[in-house]
Amino acid sequence: MCEFDPRCTGSDDLIGHALSLIASGSWAVTGVYGDESSAPVAYTSGLTELGRPELVITGVDPEHAGAVLNEAAARAVLAPGFGAGSTIDGMRSTNGYQLTAIDVIDASPMRVTSLLFGQSFQAVQLVWPDRDGRLPWDRGYALVPDEQPLLGVATPSAGAK
Picture: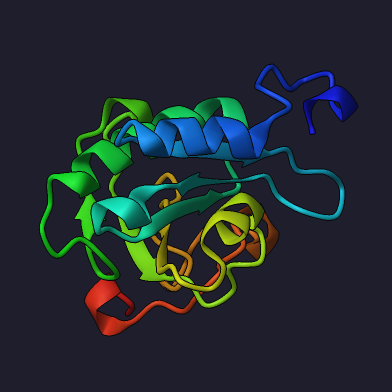
């Protein structure tokens, strides 16, 4: 929690904070800093209550990931049918880069969401492109897999090539 990481500025009461946001009709964002062995990860808790999949992003520091997830969640809530294969573009927090949603198979990094909803939630990972607009499953993707670990598998509807 925050008392163990000097970079953290959020509440130590992650569950209580998330519950109060969810009760008000919103969602919480939890960010986890990366280290030598794992990339940073951030995710939502509460979109389930609004009929949408939870969102997760990897490889983005929590300070930036929070803004991305909040902006993406606000759009997802207004988009009937939002899920795997959906794209989000034109967001200020991503400098216009398009994000592509894939089904999450491994939700283990989403600990707060799992504590709140058990296994009764769906999630999509928002996957970001390299500088040339290529996604991790595209030929020529410029980043190493550890920079943006995938928690699921891209499908043709997610633009897999």
